[in-house]
Image 1 (spheres, rainbow, N blue to C red):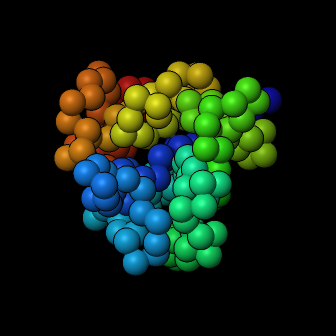
Image 2: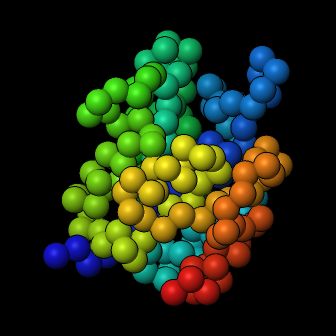
Amino acid sequence: MYKRKAIFFDRDGVINKLIHREDGLYSPRTFDDFNFYQDVASCIKQLAENGFLIFIVSNQPDISRKKMLTEELNKIDIEINKKLNIDQIYYSFDSKLVSGGSKKPSPKMIFEARDKWNIDLSKSYFLGDSIVDMECAKNANVSFILVRRKHNQDIEYPYYVDDLNNVHRMINDII
């Protein structure tokens, strides 16, 4: 039934850099604070050229918490779509985990993409930087690859990359 293959990217900490705020690292709340990692565009280009659909699945609870304006998120999305070959962005605005909700680790956003885009999850991958991303991939039965950045060096996972430009090679090794 499902035929296409996809890569699901977490956004904050994988696609873009986190922001120092309140003694921690967090998602940017404004367009001016949004900065891509340098290895993202080339990685996505290579994956798309190899037949993968490209999606972003991201928790953005600051919208429902009224700590981020929708206009700022829209500006960020315009920039993402201008610079990257993304098929669709899926957001959860849920501030808490709720039954039937979409906040990761719920697989709901991945299942929505699967059904809309005819995706075979057994041929797809989730690239994330957190335990929540790992759990989301597991809940969706999608292979997970940890993206190691400066902020998450303490997380252990057998499949990881320190540079997104190594993702295509990692996928070929897994296959």
